[in-house]
Image 1: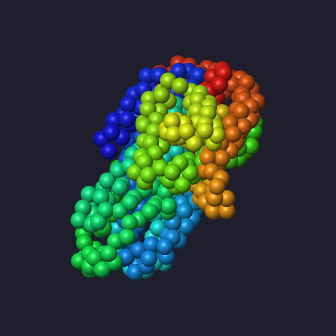
Image 2: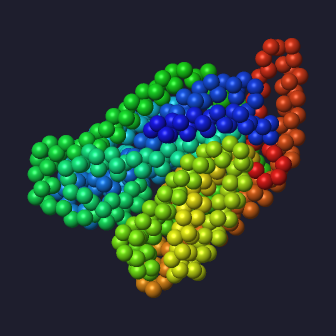
Length: 495
């Protein structure tokens, strides 16, 4: 949590120091008013997203306990993942609609309270259907939080939101990293299990444990270990939600100004086409990321004939490179345009996936390709949101569509790869999937860039004309208040 807070503070300072007129999100009092609450917004949102990642990832280490608690086998409660995913999709859509009409801080606070309630109730849940309902509630609250964090950053900093979005998404990775450690500390007396974090919990390989000992632990008030990890995470979420209620009480005037600013914004000529293409872009990207992270362990054992500890190390290399580059991107986003970061990521993804698809039988190619591929995937999602904000207005509905696309990619592509791998045992489907999605994203981005810049000049002239009128009409006043569209300050070249 300390590392996340430091990275968020550094990102805020870097973005203030490196802001240029070509990248300004807002001007005048709108930007000043948003900046007053900016550090608090980012810090609270980052803590919320850290805990979101923790809430998702803690399911893997405690999955066997959940099954024992509802008197089921692990294989019989797979549908709780479906329930959480459906709740997440519904929450993302609902959040996108509500964030355009309701105060963002209030919605984020309520979503954290919903997650807190679900986390507190899960350890005492004795019915599998009730457990699924609680998982759906938590998933819906997380969908609202995921959409809301992106919307809040864009509304506060506009096209300068790059470092802040990178910090938010790094916070999620950090939360997913912390969760297994927290669960292991809380369950120190239980037998070790082979764990995986976050989105890959459905593919976790859980070591068998004694049913009798697990039942005995549950009879002793759940042994205090299984219970403790959920209560700790829920308590932190409850604490953070109070800060959002405080921000809600202080942000009404700033929100009114921001809303007035958004109403005066002009959208890109091909706004809807851009949104749909970015939806597909995120679907391919997140699907590829989760697929590779889920199946690289199995690939290493079956195709590369690695030992189990070597395969686990290869899996750690992928996620380690992903987490490190996501942390570094917090600072890189302050001095590089989002489009530049996307292009660099796409190049790295294309080169590494090609190496993995055709030369993975060489150990050095497999290890190096995995590291580069993980690093290349780290910055694409937050950079994509920052990039599109430079050219058109992104409100709640659009942001929720991006999150839904990512969630669908996470659900569908790994399932398809698993099915195909079962049908074609001797074909490295996961590697060809990585290459195919890399090609797809490399094709989609130039098309999006062409559409985004098609009407850029007219938008620039229109915004400059409106800015001159605002300056002339407010001459003689001590403070100039202009509400410029975030997409009105387009820099030349690739952004």
